[in-house]
Image 1 (cartoon, rainbow, N blue to C red):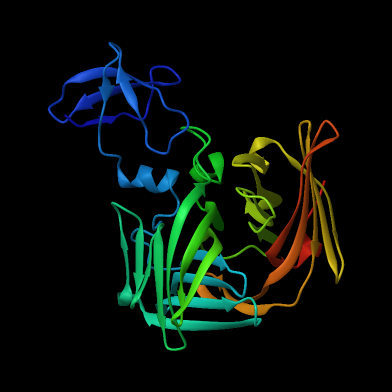
Image 2: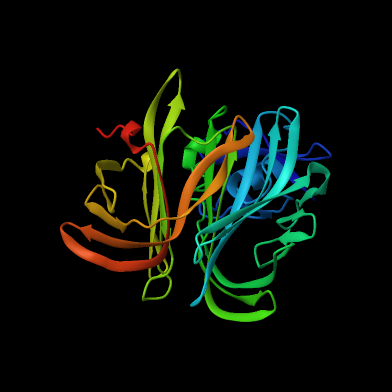
Length: 364
């Protein structure tokens, strides 16, 4: 029989649960790593219930977060594929701007350094709740496959062996951790798939042996300033790097926050604001970008070789009227040390890079 739980626990992981018929039982939360809550009764019997959608999308931000929001809101997914001969980013999304609500699919051709913005009626957007899925016109996006049907591009892809960024605990969901519970944030960020294999066709040409990455953003506007770096094309498997450093308006002021993850042989190392890590230095020139982050006895040093890219539309109060230059042709050098000893050194090819008003980033 399905159960639901009250918001106030009798202890840190103990909840008062009751059936729809009103039978009350005490249940203990027993899984602090998964995205779906699991409980057992005091007697040890498991409780099974269907996860409410609000809880599912909190712990699995890939799902559509917009709900009934129809003003000053955007949401977009970032599907990146890299093959030996080409690289693309496909960005499906919705824009609920004042008097201009619409859906879109952006395409960034990393090899050619070009971009396209394809606009659709908002009624052509739909999403599913049971298994993640988004449809915009005849373009279909899921976790295990996606297809592109645009005037200048037709493609089908299948994704294999994805490595996900999972919630740390019941109270630290997704990539944002406890910041996921903070209302009215300007923009929220979710890293969904750190690394996966991808095969498919592009305009009828078979493609195989590629790498796939998936993230998303949603909210009102992009930050005033940020640096974004990403690559999962290292010379060893199950390795990936993603880092966002941005200005965060908060409580009438603001701070520089960051979300960085390094996947090393399948193990994720988190360097984030909410885990107590600190950005120690950012140095930016026209040719390179250097970042140093420390977290306890771990240190993350990143050096990026900059390349020219193409302009993408970005959200401003829900409207896709901003512009940000992005490349998929940078190279990132990543070093992770523990107590001064290197535990990872790697070079990521086809790195995505965005640098926007870095002079506004405040580093303590």
